[in-house]
View: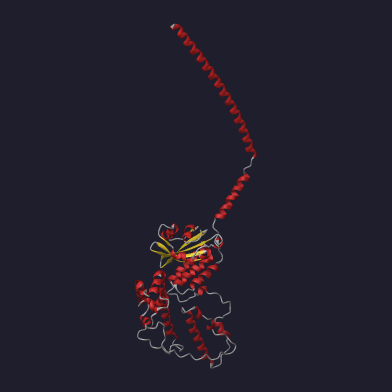
Length: 439
């Protein structure tokens, strides 16, 4: 029985082995058929793709792509500066140079910057923080000019302002991060130009341009305007020729030179030379007054006598010196310089009068500059001081320091006959109300 069982087991094993071998053979045959079919299809597909590639030319596609890239680059590139129009820069510098005080100079700078952009703002540096002083053009381009005065940027807030302070160089970028903080839609082009006063960066001028004004955005002109303004502020107290002859317009032959006037005039009769000399002396005095920092309304072209074919009539006698009432005991000394009796209009005494006038003009300009700086950097205190009539108490340190600078620079003979520093304190800080000083 055991032998019979072994035979049955061997027979079953042989049948199973035979079935497995047959099944494996069939699978191998099927795999080979599939492989042959796949190879055939791949060869056909490859031949089809190769035929398609041979029939296509990529050159037109490449040329079209290059053209699209060039157009996109031109659209993204900032507009070229509007060079060649130096007259625009000259007119802008003329407007700034005609200013009589530091505040007027800065206001003129901002106004003239709009020739080269859409909006302009002056950001004053206090320590390491930039604070808005004034803005122009913001109300006309989706914002409010007064928003600039509330702007403050501590280090790290605007990277471009940090670069101006750290590297002391001009920064050009799209300006979107700064324009939005100033309350206007993002700009397309912008520039920050550091303003150097007394050999240090004192402020930064921000000028940007919207898409509509992109064509007039001129970085080079803005840089020149800011640079010139810094120099003008540095020399404001010592400049005497305002406006500068270097920036004056040509008269075009409408007013002949003094030599031409003498050549064109007919020979005078014997008694006329004395009268002619009086006319020349009066004209020189009028020209000296024109060079002084007086209001614009006093500038007149009538100072030069017209040339006539006949001798001019004798000039009227000089008016007598006005009487000056003695000030009351509780009043401060007058700030107006009054020349001694007999000097005005007298022959042979023009030299001392010129020197004295120059000293008083310089003292007046220097006082105006000192007080303007106090107001420029303390506008909020000035506003509160006017309301509470305690300007001196709020600005005592600045006023005393400026007064000391005035006393050290201005000669004693000028300070004994005038009080220009107090006069400018009343006019500029107190807005004409002496009681606001709280003295």
